[in-house]
Amino acid sequence: MSQTKSLDELANLWNKTKDPKYKELWYKTVKETYGSNIGKRRIVSVSNCHKRDDGTYLIIGKSKLL
Image (cartoon, rainbow, N blue to C red; front, side):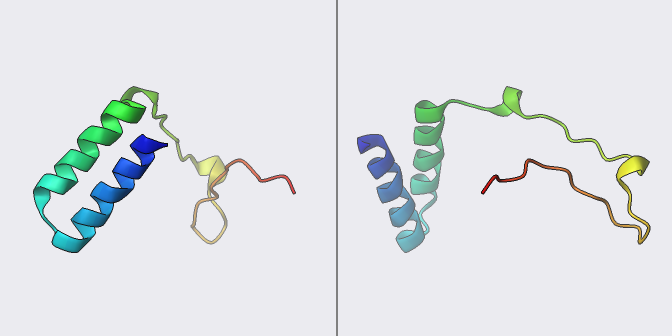
């Protein structure tokens, strides 16, 4: 909880001052807290089977259950 509060304070300082040191510190703190997820990202392919008749693409995602 205290780490989240620290992140919020850094974000507020960045919004007030626009000082790049707060932005860099915020990114560093996020990386230390939650780790880097660069390797966990997945590529979503778009193929012709998901293309609609009007030329747009259908985005398939998880649906929320009510």
